[in-house]
Length: 433
Ligand code: SF4
Ligand code: SF4
Image (cartoon, rainbow, N blue to C red; front, side, top):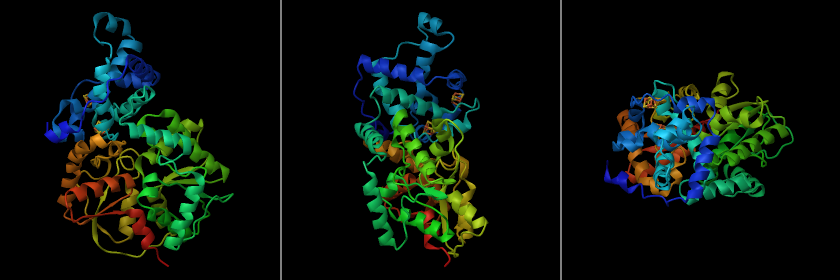
């Protein structure tokens, strides 16, 4: 194990007995038949280890994916599994101790991007990323979410809908300012609209041009569309923190905003986790099938290109494309960005393992938000660096602003002469008049 990785994991504060009990209650609350089957199906083949960037980069067996959910498995076997009595009697699933939970905080948060690469490779079909997400629920319920500020972000998000505490009037002012800066008409809070685009708080804070880019594309299409200030930030830090109630609130806020203007399409921004949340989980939160489509922005653009509603100029140059885990592997939006790059005349140099098996940038699953995880994240990033360098190109496009931020951060730390750019912004800058 590298000294860098060791430095990444100072012990978390040891929880008290009440927190341990709350965490176990939280774990149990998440165990239904599917989870129970997953928790009891592991055949200990070890294949998931080789799929995980944190294990591969450190060789530390603690970072074996299935090991990260060990307290969750123990809670199942000891408390609710069919042989719980025997497990307790024979000491096969010992009680979870405060020290163990303190150590596992790092495994459940800092060393998992929820990228699902391990889930893809598991021969037993165990969705380990999903188990980590569920284990985080128990940790959050017990006040054991990683690093205080991750909890603070989730709390702010719960209160305002935005992890940075951006309220409706501030968002509206920001949209109009961005519209003025970029010379684009911003539709805000229209009573009816076919398309409702959402934003990510990373875009709001770091990449406001991407909000102008969405507007440019929708205006170019001649679409009926509007931003809604009653449901705009799809980032959903609550999801990665493990705050189930907050996660649901953000998701339902967007659903209600779309319903309020009779939208038939909700467009997710360049943001990975928000897309899988809205595409796969929103209907559960809503309680029935959503009465509108959920498209990631690249899917909307690829569709627009195919029916002639979007026309772009050719801008021939060489580049590679970074597949965000939640967009490609977990979301299925793998072909759309390639359709777009082809339409733009970009010569695509694919990374090894591109598409569904691509490696995570290292920052997903909220890891980029955890300060103490930075050395570990940087270690994981080295895989991505190698993948990119093999392509020999100087430009990397991505459709996830979280990945964009992590790639920029990793590049800066290495004095890279690479440019990381948004695919959406490339399209918006090259629309045909
Ligand atoms: S989801 Fe990704 S980061 Fe988490 S354990 Fe699996 S491979 Fe590792
Ligand atoms: S790949 Fe699946 S079965 Fe094999 S150790 Fe990992 S979780 Fe268990």
